Length: 403
Image (cartoon, rainbow, N blue to C red; front, side, top):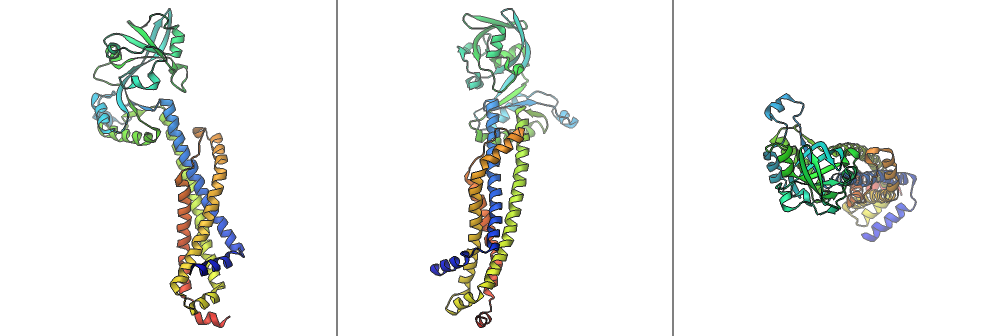
């Protein structure tokens, strides 16, 4: 049976009629479009979340917001987060690295006869271990300093330069009426302008005792373990805070605007690319039906002879389905090969023309190989059902008389 099938396929494919070639080309176009869509789309999403990790240091800052809806404001009659909100996130976000409150503010800081307005970051013990807040110079917070019992702070490199702090001797700065000892210099936050690079970092307990309300929280910081956890974590944060505070009463860090806008563009690209690919595969499937029906008519005498020599209708139907499947697989493999060759160039064109996804990195993931192959194979088998049924209704005697 297998040798007979191979001989038939060789006899059929060898001429490579124009209709067959066009069908394979159309199928390959659909496979190419689908593979490129998956390769570029998955790579773009991965790049966006890695960009977020780079900008925010593997973290997301969540700010309180009363929202535009008066009914929401009445339901939650305060702007700031409370410890209840933090505890809800800590309890339900079990897979993240840390969830803790953070103090944010801005004030004029004096040091060595210089004064500048600095961003104030009051961080807890968990954030003090993050790379963004590890000192590049100095010792960092002492145990008593971290607990707020003594007044210690660290400055970013830009802030230290502006205030002329070099740490060669004990240095102090004054924030309003309070004097703090500078115990370390930390790196400037990545990809930020001068306004946000000039920062003073101090323990959360110190910042709250000096300038904050002890029962109110201005910012909640969530850190995840790997870029793959980013999307799932952000979605979980939104669901939890929408339940505890009400929708629209919180605000995710500004870097999320870039991510969300980029994701919107990528989603539209993937939707358009998938639609275009499926349309091409649909046209190719119609071509498969026409090719197979034409092939059955052309080979009706051959089929009749096979039936005469004992071939069953089931074997002939299977032969038609296999031939249809081979058409689809041939087109799919050609399309995937072309996608591998041209995806880097297409990704470069997209990233150079769409600012929100500049620096796009494509991803040759397994899904990009298997999905086009599976869709093309399924569509070609489905297209072969009608010809397979047609061959079972072949008039054997009439076909033999016409020989």
